[in-house]
Length: 548
Image 1 (cartoon, rainbow, N blue to C red):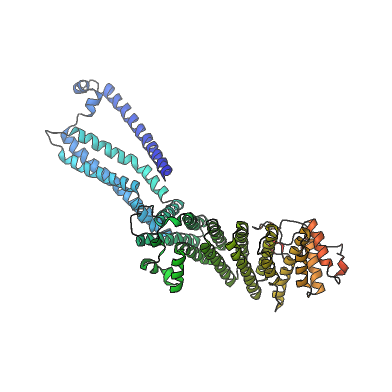
Image 2: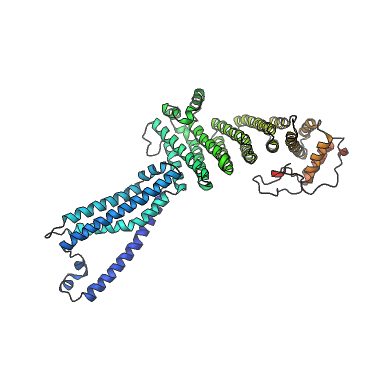
């Protein structure tokens, strides 16, 4: 804030100095030319000198001139008010009504508009104070200087207004004020707790409104900034919330009247208050609203909401705030449910990628309570995989299986206590299919399990690979053979399309391929463990991420 103000002060002074200097230079040059050239013979000119002649006012002429000055400054004020009103109204309509409130609270705006008004009043009064026998010289000089300053300030002031209303800066300003209100450090720090809560909630609503409006207008940059501002409020609030008093975390009548709170069951509101997480819930609830709008209008922004939610969860993990971590996981589940209901496979695919990264962060934290939540996350992966498969969205089930497999690998490397639970969850995904579409999705799940088995053999964890083998013994020979051949046929690590994950799901390096052959060799009826020499150079029927 300080550096921004200093930058604008320097820019304002520079903008004022240049036209003012040029005007003074031009006037002074031609005035001296007139004085010493064309009017040098005038009796009074030589007696008074150039400066004295300039200030030698004639009362009759001066009254008309000062009246014109008052009209000029009034016209400048009218132009400023007209332009500012139009621009502020457009910005408030497009983004949020908070724009007008911030504009008229800004000290620079109030100072400039106040200066225009004062200059106009001064010019009127000075014009009335001139008499035939009295000329207020100092007042006239000051009035001329104020009118000159008003004209000079017009251009830099318009530049300031447009910069002030830049949507990115409006968003940053709202986010900053939201955090200050929450922490009791802003202009309203002396307000009572309920007033601060109300201002904080209103500001979060406005950030969400900016994001939703931007999505409706297909403005990705502004939508991303608004979502990020919501995330920053929560992330920066988390490590400092312990310094706040108990009254801040209570959900009083003001908060209960908030539409998002009204929709909750009374017990849920009580739980939020007792856990001290109403602000985080409110922020994530706004993200959920943005997610729902993005799912309909701009699906790529739904991915951004998932990323920001993951950042909130990781911040909660770092702050050891397990209540907020649990809350973020619940919202990730809510996003997944919404994506599946919309049958948006791409969004579900991206969500699972972020969800898996969150689970990996939980595993790296080596926190006992986080580990307990991690086993629940694995169960959620299985639940939504089976739900997606039942809806005919087999690729989502396959993606969840590969992500669970990646978590099992990481758990094995880090010796996580939840490894066995994650592995059991992965093996439980592929329940009996009811139709060909579900069968295809479960086939991808088997490929993910086989890939994990190859890793276990490479890591020397033969009993775990045997556990996968035991789960696959009832599969048909033809199906196992085709899975094996397709996985061995993948030659390129990178998928042939641009994807966030970067690599083919089914890609295995040469060492893993050897172990995959060893794994399938355990199925004695499968070509007696012999892999056909002729395999395709690329995966047949591979979908996004290199999976079938």
